[in-house]
Amino acid sequence: MENYVIKKILSNNVVLVEKENQNYILVGKGIGFGKKKGIVLENPEIIDEKFISLKGLSENEYESFLSQVDPKIIELVEEIMVMVKNELGEGLNPNVHVGLIDHINFAIKRLTEGIEIVNPFLLETKLLYPAEYNLAEKAVSILKENLKIRIPEAEVGFLALHIYGGRGNKSKKEALESSKMMNTIISYTEKKLNIHIDKYSFDYKRFIMHLRGVIDRVLNHKTIENILLSKVKEELMIEFKVAYDVSKIIEKTLKVKIPESETGYIALHLHRLNSQRCK
Image (tube, rainbow, N blue to C red; front, top):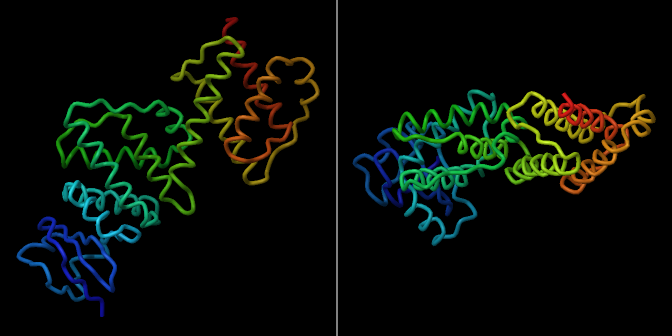
């Protein structure tokens, strides 16, 4: 029998409990109403598996964490987690709970204080992780509806990274590094080819999606032959040199090897971008 001992009532719908020397946050409608510290909850159906493990946090750490978090945010994060699970047909890694609660709580605090949220990698994130971005938009809708606060698109990008990081064996850090990498590649390309790439243009989106394809193929060992490689190296020397450098940026960031055939395809896309300024 699962016995949860209440350690603290956070709100009528959120309680801190202990089970087998492990701390959890339980979320359920009315779960804390009329309850007191020390009460034992035995197999409470109201919980409906909505619990957040605080494993890994020391007594002082989770006390500090809970003292800074609005219980309403905890409820909404659980609603978001359920939404994501229903949409994906799979749940996110439980370890993402605390990080997501902390992030959203801090973001809402900044917004209520009038502090602008800036996300320099928003467009890259949107293009690289469309499924997660779509879920993040739905998550923001949940927050807006319940908190009655304006939330900028920049925050959608950050939530998309959290959602991506909670899927399988992926990580938020990995997603952020990829978004930063794409931003670096665009800046480097603009500098070396002396062009400006409109981030809202189709050419920009096509280039980012091609780079994503390159990365996916390399990671899955499905790179394709490039029958135009010798011609590209001979006739597009400038673009191939830049493409070579772009490949090295990817290799350094993702610790993978980009074959020359893929570098040739990158050069072709760079040639298309470079040709735009002549029109």
